[in-house]
Image (cartoon, rainbow, N blue to C red):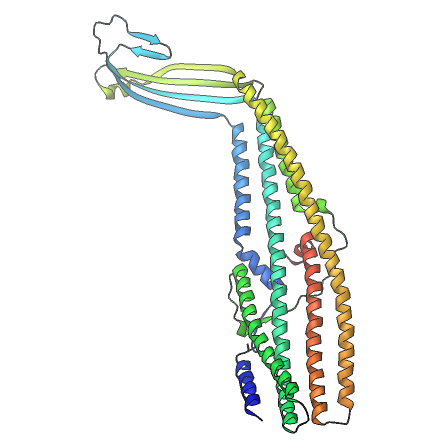
Length: 441
């Protein structure tokens, strides 16, 4: 073997020793990765928090049905600085000027209740409840989008992983072919160009494996971001997708996005109804109870002097005419927001229908591609079988046979790759319709 051939073969052997070892590997699957992603996802955790916040808002809205009770206490020392003033008190505007010098204390209890507001409180409660439903649906949207991203990432990782395995399997075949071609070259049976072509094929395969190893490491790192687990390429084995049946039908009205927009529009319509009712008077009742005590010289005695002073009941009717114009402006604003939400809903539903149609088309196209790859694989395997039956076993025929064995391995990978693409699209269709979660979660 000449020095050039020896150098290439040595480089190939050294580089091949760096290939990842799949023995004793940890098995991971798409279902496993997705389950860990759901446990670890910050977006899903925040979506759950948003649901809990919305439920607290419902409780807060219901509190408006309760009466309002507040207490007021005051301890004061009042001193008359004008001793010659003949009046005990005077009023100016909303101020009362007291002319007595004394310590005085007051405890006041005020109770009020919104008796009738034309259903405003009820609509606020309904808005809060619909917000809970909207947040629950948003969780489903986040779950779906996360699962779609993980499906794409896992498919790319799996293809890279399978390609490394296939490349590792053809590596010793290419080495053997190279060795045989080198012997043929030394015997003058093949040209140096043909021998060099095999050396280049071997070197390219080694370089390809190294590049794929870097890609696999990056893909596994991306999976780690989703799951919170670390995956070492040396001890991680990726399992393929299980067989997936295409969903029978797709109705965009069952999508959480569609329902969210309907809820948001309904909430805005209820807000608009509230604004209209705010132009009407609000009726309520109230009660005030006061305890009062005073002493000219001693603050302690002023506290001890606390006693019933007054009790009042009343009915209120509140209407603020100056807010009418502002209210009408807010109503117009809400109507525009409702119109905008309707347009956004139409756009989003078109996007979802287009995306699903694309997945469906790709899944069926890859089904045909996969069948073509299977048929091609059968022919390649048949050719290999026929070549093995040939009695002529000289070096040239051995090289041809080895090349055919490598072609079978690469064709098997190509067939598996088309299957992964087909299954990934079908899996994403299941995720979009919610069928995957109903069957697996």
